[in-house]
Length: 209
Image 1 (tube, rainbow, N blue to C red):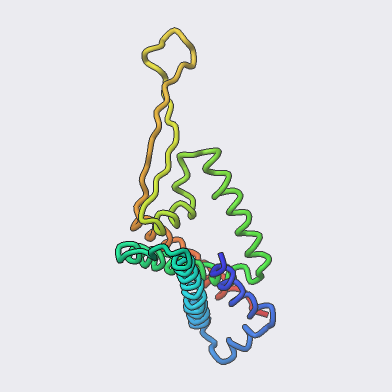
Image 2 (cartoon, rainbow, N blue to C red):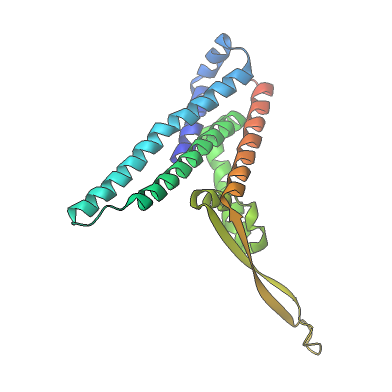
């Protein structure tokens, strides 16, 4: 979320202060401006995330050592390194998405409103109303990538063939689906690419002033 906010503010601030017009004076090709600002947001998120990860891991290690407990073996630290790397990729993609949304909507408040609507309508309400469509949520695929894989389940009901004299009798089974880490990453990359393309298209067609 912090990386997403960084990506949004990195671009929206340019529109709010009017410095985006100055950018276009020196670099009139808007595609290059989008590429440079998006890359800047992605690169800028890296040291912030790495610093947060180092702080958490170092603090946890110190807490274990202070209590006389082992700080973990090579297997544990290898697993933590994998998780940290996956989290770093998520943060970079979040910064890219934030920059893309800012190019499309221009104002941080508009981006916030769109994200809140998406979170409430799709990420929260949709899995409750239609559990079988939970695969349409971004959060599920982000979780799949961060954890290596994840599962979701829903009840699938059909008329009960063994009870013919009861109207509406049904038999339900629990269907479990697994979303792999690779699938989660691919979905996140596609979503990011679509949003960047949308932001570029809007930025090219709209007046900056």
